[in-house]
Image 1: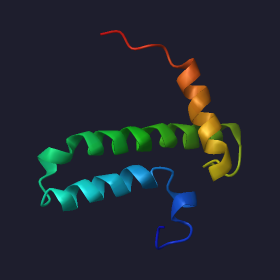
Image 2: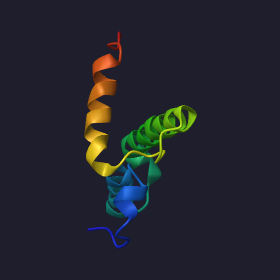
Image 3: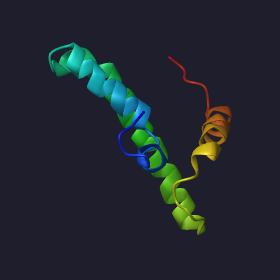
Length: 86
């Protein structure tokens, strides 16, 4: 459980952030071994920043959706996202 009771509300990427810190601790702060965790955290932040900007532009408050709405927003995005081609 996060120390700050509002941490999850204020940071939609709290889980990704904590996993990054855990990886660093586990690997003696060797950043190279945790690149995947950093990339995941950065992707998360980028996604929620876009959501926040979109809601702000549409005049929807709060700009960051409540915790209970976040899974549905991510699911909707994943449905609409075009498949990756390699």
